[in-house]
Length: 342
Image 1 (cartoon, rainbow, N blue to C red):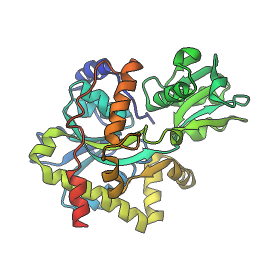
Image 2: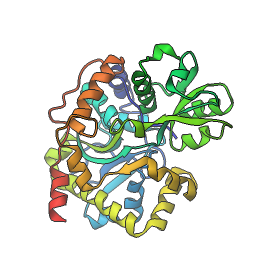
Image 3: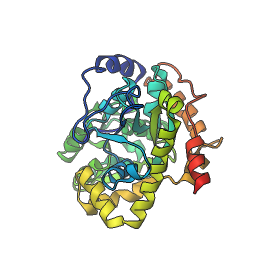
Image 4: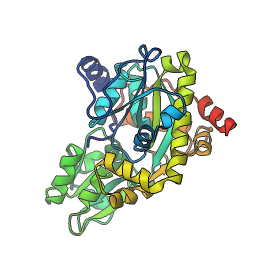
């Protein structure tokens, strides 16, 4: 499975244009097109491999979209990068993606809106080290791999920064996450940055340990439903139905746990037991959590504050060339409407 990526401004802009015609989704629904087609057909929503997004599969299989009177073409992407580019190119009406990636594509010119927070990563993104490495400082001069530009690369940089270090203090190895996990298990690396389910694979190395996780940086990695602004402006009822469907799905999962977990674990390609282990590392947001996160604040649990800090961090790290416009990034009216009616 490909991963949630942090895309640089130049890469998103150039590559997004290049794949505008060629990018096609993988298994699942046949990839529908842009929001221009949504008025007369299904709304195209993308998602990929992350525990906080698998509930969308439950919504589809259990008929929850239909119950909320919204026609959805739910499109699975084996490659998260492909979903980002499909949204940027207008091939999707909405996508499940991180705050970090959303800042990157907004800086590149995408006109999108965050209407829902699915979850926060609270442990499922991990920096895992071999035996003998017991602190972040012990990484100095060691071979450490992560997929360059991913949120796990971002997490690695945050950990180094906390220890008064930079990427220059380690021997950074830019590897695709699956390859990085395999190389770590094979003893070719000293540490690796991965997310579930690759965390399970990496920890198969004897003596390996979790050095730090996203739980140590609350709010640093948040995941969202991001939609085209055009959809918000022209079809607000559709957006409302999507938000309502999400919360209805969370209720359905609570009431039908075993069946729902079976659906999600199959979509993830892991066993039910493995999937259950990921639950603690992903904090799913209720409607109340959504509204609280959108309040102004002075730490990373406040999304407006987090967006400003992440934007600055990405620029300083060279992953973002210019600051995105944050003034219209968040739209809480749909969650508020859902909360009011329930």
